[in-house]
Every structure is written in C-alpha cells, then in structure tokens.
Image 1 (cartoon, rainbow, N blue to C red):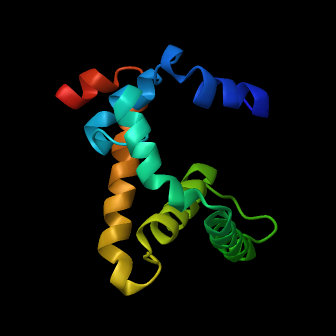
Image 2: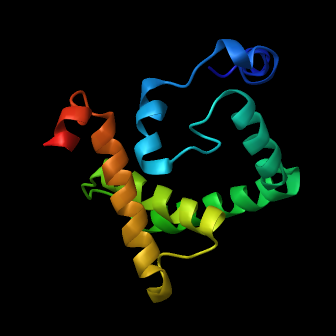
Length: 139
C-alpha cells in the first residue's frame, strides 16, 4: 500500500480495525511486545514514546545513512561479477539498521558483536517467516 490517503486510513483513522500480519505476530518471539508488534492502546503509548525519532530532521539523518551505505556498497560492485543479491541486501540492511537505530557501525571492529547479533536476528526472523517456520523452530 503506497497511497498516502490509504496509509492515513489504516495507521491513524481506523487503526482499531486492522491487525498486524501473521509475520509480525510471529516476530514477537524475536522482537517482543513493542511498537512494531503491538496493537491497540499499548501501541498508541509506544508510538508516542518513539515519535521524536521520526522528526523530519531525524529522517534526513537516516536518509544520509542509507545513501552513504548504498553508495559505498555499489562502488564495490563491478561489471560482469555475479552477486548473491539477497546476501548483499541483508548486509546493507544490517549496516543501515545498526547505524541508524543502534548508533553502531558494524563495519568497525567495535561493531562485530552487534553486527553478528543483528545478522542472527535477521536469519531467525527469515526462518520464522517460512511456510513451516513454527514447526522448524520447534524441531
């Protein structure tokens, strides 16, 4: 959904009529009960707490982080090479999340633990999203 009117309808005007997707409900195992996974009044309280992180000036900072990591990665790509695009996108996503949310650059040695932990979380989340993710987790 990318129409601003529809987004406002779902996220603001009629929030109580919409529930989180199965994927987000399952992700509570990894993320806990927070803004992304919660609903109702609890979600409203969480949203108000995090709202300063979405101030327009902060969004510009996030855009700069995304742009710099994207440019850096694209410079490493050369004509004619084969890439595992899923691996590349996971890598850039991890870098962007780590820098913008945690304030840590996982490319530095200091960020090794954070980067590895973040990658493990992404792998776990992907596994939960699989068709038989619940069963695989139990096994």
